[in-house]
Structure formats: C-alpha cells, structure tokens
Length: 42
Figure 1 (cartoon, rainbow, N blue to C red):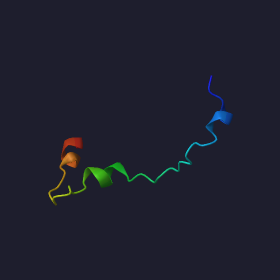
Figure 2: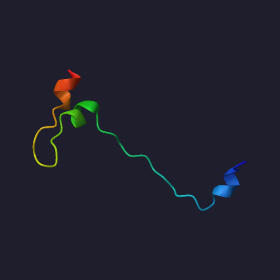
Figure 3: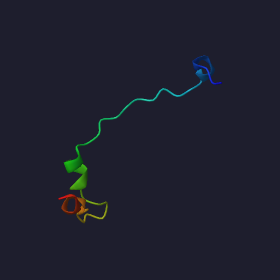
C-alpha cells in the first residue's frame, strides 16, 4: 500500500487558472482561422 511518506521526491504541482468556456470555444487556431466550436456549442 502506498503511504504519503513514500512520496518525498514527488513534484510540487500547482493549479492553473482555466479560461471560461466561451473564451476557448471562440478562440482562433494557430493558423489564424476561427475554431468554430462556439457555433457547434450553440
């Protein structure tokens, strides 16, 4: 069984702020074209 003491060398992970769904659904792709996912969501 894994104990918390066994995780001494584990990485310290931190959470990141997530964008709102409307922000990433209406975002542009890397090539500059609109993603279009917002139209599918509606």
